Image 1 (cartoon, rainbow, N blue to C red):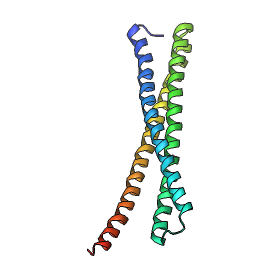
Image 2 (image 1 turned 90 degrees about the vertical axis):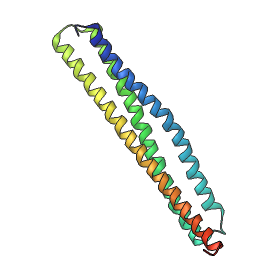
Image 3 (image 1 turned 45 degrees about the vertical axis):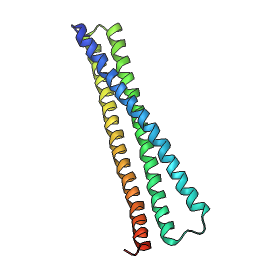
Image 4 (image 1 turned 135 degrees about the vertical axis):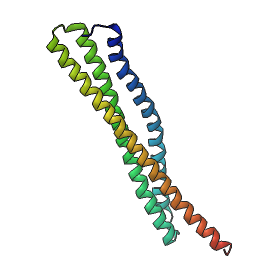
Length: 162
């Protein structure tokens, strides 16, 4: 398929490095998923188990639960994107190896090259989409924390007469 062994190595090493990047992102995202689920469950428990909450607390908890649900959905989408990316990179590497080992015709080699290019491109797009979803999830997390902090600060100021 290629004239230089270094070219073959680069065709294999590129997807392998991208696979490694995707798996590192995946591991971190799995932790975020667990934390987002825990937060959503905690908020749901607080809402369901406390009849003595005032209207302001209930509204805050409802807003936060809505945000927590969106966060979980974004993390799930990121996980899915990273899984697809890993699959694409693995498929691209396998296609290249099969093509290098079995194919000898220039037309066959070109088809394999296109398959590798499409698989790798799709994998990179999935990495970008998953990373963008995580960035948005981080923003939602911050907004939820800010909302809660503002309420606590308002109440503290009211208690201390400021």
